[in-house]
Image (cartoon, helix red, strand yellow):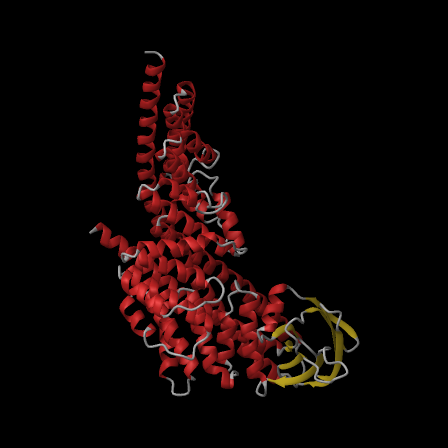
Length: 623
């Protein structure tokens, strides 16, 4: 019964977090709408359709003879513009009346160009688009030309808004842009791009873990008669993906099986990976191998490596080990530059190494294990395995090398702990008894020290120090999060956090805690923003004493009602997020204590073995 209650509590928190995410998104959207209602902003977008090798270096803007900005472009911004995105380079207030905008650019080929545009600013929101386009004239064929055109809230803005959302996704891949998408939808300003934007929104929902909500979006797109064939196929794929994340593999495969051309290359590649992954997770390796062989093609980016790895694994488990091993060997021989591909190659080499080690083919095993990079995620297990491969060959002098390398690493890792026994064992096998004794002595001291650290961590957890340390973790960005996890591993209660998150349950608890803290911080930021808006509104209301200001006063009063509602919702969200943080911290404490108890049992065994081996070594030295 206890297990059932724990599962129910975990599911309850997951549901509450899903609800809080939705509330947060709606608050973000409504706050963006409120700010636009107050400011009636003037916006400037930048787009380009130039030569493939053309890359903006700087864009300079002047408004009414005064410098507005100088923007220097990053690599991600180049890519986002080349993919057809529209950059919002400026957004601010502007007085009503006549204005003049001057823009000029410099590029990587020393090209430069510019233009000017006169326009009239009205009381409503207004947008201008700067467009850099390939010049078609024969005289300056390679010199892109700069155009400036005016848009409005109701005319020609739909393609610009849609392209801006795509630009945000490509230029700032880690930024949460869902509220921007929802704002554009609320304004009903996307016109012919409404379905495209809805698909985009569904993808973003998937990324945030809102799988049920995403699924409903994809179903609506599929059932919409106005949906183009390509969009409908992509919606089918993403619906299948949402079912997969919900653990509904049968439904996922059903939708993936209905997809036909046309479909984009990247979606097709991911679909191939997901389809085979589901089949293998169900133990249907033969079907997975048949599917991958039937649908084989050269996928873009790193999807091709995933496909080859999946096919190799499927072949090995379906009885064609030779073909599977050959395929994985080819991956292991490749050299890649990006970190993800290198990690996949390391995984392939380690998998082959342990496969051969389990088949008692030690020489082959060592060949592949030695190819695994020393600084990667798979290095410790590879070093341990490489040592055992040499030991199987009775080459203890070679086994010593990777095992000694392991002893330089973090004692909290299990392979490192095992190496404290394997090194003196190898010296013993080589007949170097004095060295063996010295290293057994070292292992006893290392195990005793680690045992004391473990007991200290367990004590810290029991005294509720974990909650205090968890609340200090930073969630402002992925980099800040990883850095704070590193720092937290120096504390007693979270000393083993990096090792323990290999456990899937604890890892999910930690992700939930991060999400809850992010939502709490997000609510706090909203409260501050709304409070500032309320202060500004009070000042405006107090300074407006003219006889013609009744309309303004009514507008201010209306906005004050909106801000009061937003503030109430933000405070409620902050309280609920904080409550979830408390509950998740308790879940993490319970799970961590259970996992640390298992680690302590294992460490106790190592300590007993090292003491016994040391005593036996003393006996051999002094018969």
